[in-house]
Amino acid sequence: MATAGNDRSSPSVGVMQDAAPAQAFVAHAQPGAADTAVASDEPFRELFESIDEGVATLEVLFDENDRAIDYRFLAVNRAYHAVSGMGGEVVGKRVSEVLPDIDPSVIQRMGKVALSGEPSRFEDFIHPLHRWFEIYLSRFGDPESRTVIVVFRDITKRKQQERLQVFLLSLSDALRPLVDPQTIQVMAANLLGEHLQVNQANYGEVWGEYVHISHSYAKGSPPIVGALRAEDFGKRLVDGHRAGRLQVCADTTSDPLFDDQERKTMLAAHIGAYIAVPLVKAGVWVGLLSVLSILPRDWAPTEVETVQEVAERTWAAVERTRAERALRSSVRID
Image 1 (cartoon, rainbow, N blue to C red):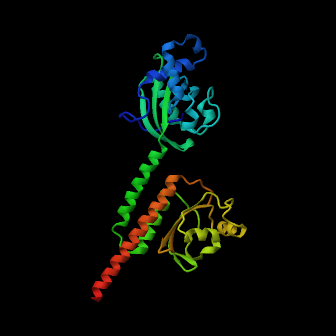
Image 2: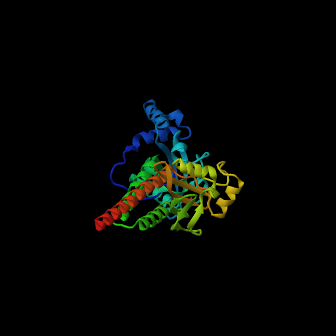
Image 3: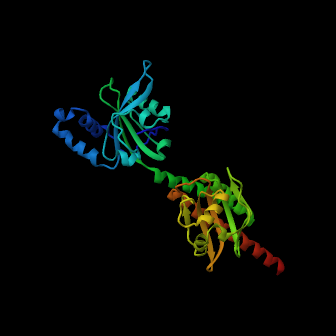
């Protein structure tokens, strides 16, 4: 398990907080341990082979200056690969072989625990694996030992939900003081585009056969603005919009929704993947919030949820300002 991040002093819920069971697992996992293992440790072995958390034991490798330069996988439990997302056999290999782009701070963290004997508990995002983990590290053995036990679990969904809630709060704060519908649409598109790190994010209003986009957040591609004939991008796609269906595409070059001509239109518009949330009122398609990627992209469920939430909040804010404007106009007439 590759790790990096800030230590936390508070206990981690769900991660093993006592190294003793893990030490028993390590003792059994070492070559030749079966001949010397004590029967009383067998329940610990069974526990670590059955729990949902991933467990690994690592031998930290140092240079002549006691600087950690690598570590080798000694043993992993059955859940290790599923929890970490790492494919292939790792036992016996160095982390530099398994993850060549590993951050050096990861190895230094392991070295610190191996040398000091002080356990470490923290949460961190592991870039090569694209996952968040809650992690517990502990040295195994006497003070001269360089073996470290790792117990961890995947908390990616929780962290994504936390990040989503923080973003939605900031979005609401940004939209609340705005009184112009166009300004609201621009602000929402810009914040959404930056948050998801997409190439385009835009809100369009539907007038007849055309979608009118006055502003598009754009990064790395020309902004899509103006009046666009909706069916040029795919009749079945537009039928879905008119029916009010959320539509998500990870790769426009292979999605069976499009024919060859529609694919060419997508390519010309630099659309390789998208999430599109339509607004339907009284059975009529009136608006569309979209985020676009030049390259194919496997959208995470929380990214799809984010676009849906932004669409709902943007439309609510726009309707609020229009209603307030209509009320003011009515008062002036009276």
